[in-house]
Length: 86
Image (tube, rainbow, N blue to C red):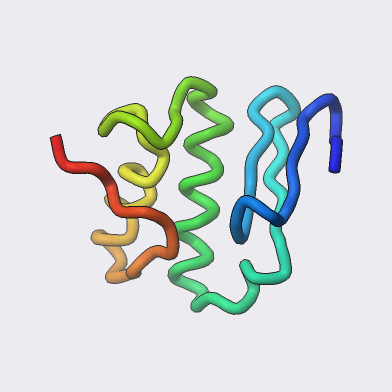
């Protein structure tokens, strides 16, 4: 699927973000998670929008690190990959 020039789809996971158009796309699998885990996934996607260079490679540039931090605060488990160790 293409939206505002951003290619996205549910083949990549439960949700995806398009930084250039500030959009988050939620897939059917997203709704199968607990409310806390959905919150963590949304924070993960927001990190991609706020900081377009946040990816899945290095700690402070890894979207899951932001989501994991919030998950730890609120007792969520998250659904994505773990924040990589330094």
